[in-house]
Length: 230
Length: 127
Image (cartoon, rainbow over all chains, first blue to last red; front, side):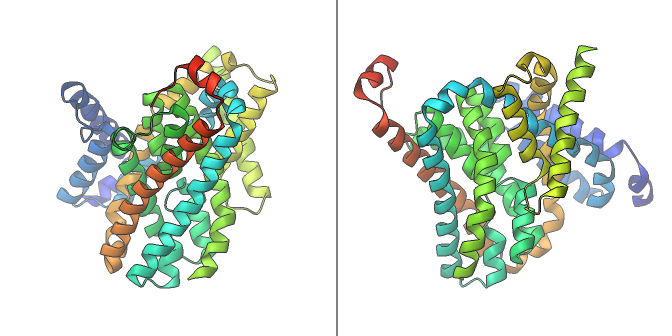
């Protein structure tokens, strides 16, 4: 059967759209952070591929046309950011301070955990870019000699966690300023978290979008310094 | 016609981003150059939000969908993750939450610290 899936131009795209649609429908019925259309579609897709023993490459052969829109969609995040230009100008120092601290906190905590678990250098640098957007993360992991596939997995899991738990974390830990929420979400879970931030509010979404770009760029520089520490 | 024009502009910025990515030897992807350039174009009034409004809202609206194919790729990463599963999963989960909480609290502290008391009152921010 794999032969057919290999060549199908619509199968992967269809099941992705279909499962996402199912997720959206469920979300309207059940209000719970785990009833998350994106998470459900990922779980259903993986389950379907496992059950019918379809290779990921066969699925992605047509689903990749969905991923194709990722770059144009990312660029569009400039619009919510521009709409919050005043807020950005007014709080510029706080925004920069927040994003810079997030990168340092990420690096320090990855370093601490890696020492605790006795990871080798390659595994350690694999985890350094875990909170930033996938394309930058891949570049950083490659440059520092990490395992790129694991970096990608860690980025995806961080994004899913942020998307699901961002709202609860902000509530529980008393993060109430919209700007602080947006930066916290964008810096810890890149674009997947930003999707949630945009749902929470325009300021949250804009600050989260900005964090993807700035935390990503800053990580390129800071990670190369931190790579020498283990 | 409007949608066509908007889509063309967005793809143009994606393309410019791609060109910069090819020219500049840093691991910064096309999308990041694109978002910064588009923001700059809007800020300098070279473009108006109206010029891309509908298509950009649509693309942002479907963004969660766009992550699904890449995330389903976790299926192939399993074998590699398994080598140090506990360490990797602990780091991924713990660091995500640590960074989210620390960044949120630090930024909030800085915001409130730098805000003048009068402004605080006028804006009605309360903890």
